Image (cartoon, rainbow, N blue to C red; front, side, top):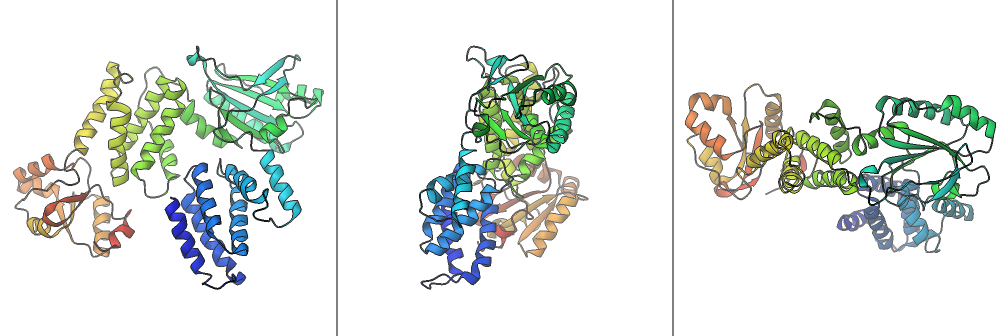
Length: 492
């Protein structure tokens, strides 16, 4: 990715020519290009964004241009709604603005940036939640977060820290939504509702009417710190309310600045209730993975698949929750089994080997074999057919051997398939050299040839689009012309 930042910078600087001084009238063009850059970086982790943004700033030698780039980057990540982006803004303050390497617009702007950094640096995603000792309604001390003990891994529960004020209108709305959600789902989580004010009577009325949970799996603890002894405001950046965090069983922050909708999405991945007779591939989990993969963009890569699988493992198996690991990774397997394009398929092959077939210690029950391992073995066998580098066979199909000799695309399709028709239309639009093979017609007219192709290629889902080079050597498979328009326009 760093290579991209340098290429992007070269394109960006070209808009300003090679003059000694920057043409400030072109700042609008600069800002637009930076907007494109932010979009490219959106799915990257905060650490990668820090490195990329530093590279972009460092490469700008003109002071005015460097300041403009740094300030636009800071404003973007300071005001971003994407969870975790605030870490980039804090990094920029510490490295560039507080040190005086780059000036902000004013002393007040620098002070605001330093305050933002100080009020947020202790509670960033991936950090251990800072300890704060508060008091419950009986005056007893309670220290958050509550961290599970190493000798009791099964006791670990996710924790919600919800900071609110009784006079805050937005808190009343958010509290009603949060209470409804938690009562409806009954997640096995611990909720710490933390009153930021000091009005004991108002707090008592709130506890008795506004925020009550009825379901047994979700526990609720009311806390406050009327004398401001714990420093929770600075530790958790509670400058406004409501403010909500989600912590894993080890007290690591996995969500911050949440509302109820965002909390629901996280808990559905990390801490959902488990069923005794679990059914994989439900509509709920399909919709969940649709949303998760949508965050990676329109074209999914193999790395996206393995990154998501790794995240699920980190939040389940690595946290001592084997059952949730099996359910989440099993659901991912079922989701991937219905995807047909190159990135998903290549990622599936890696995922199946690393998370299922190589882990007999995890998938060790008859139900696992029936519902998960068997499906993984079947998909693995299909994807091992016609691998990249293999040579496709000769057949008597008209035009086949000519295409095999010169190279091009083979579209295996079926009559009446709308996706097949769409892919063929795009191929025509791009003037691609392709041969369309109607598998329905072939199975009726030449069953032996049809069986030959079924044995050699993975034709379990159509269309199957394979690219071959000269002499029929397979270059790519599971292609979608719609996804790879830019790639297909390049000269081979």
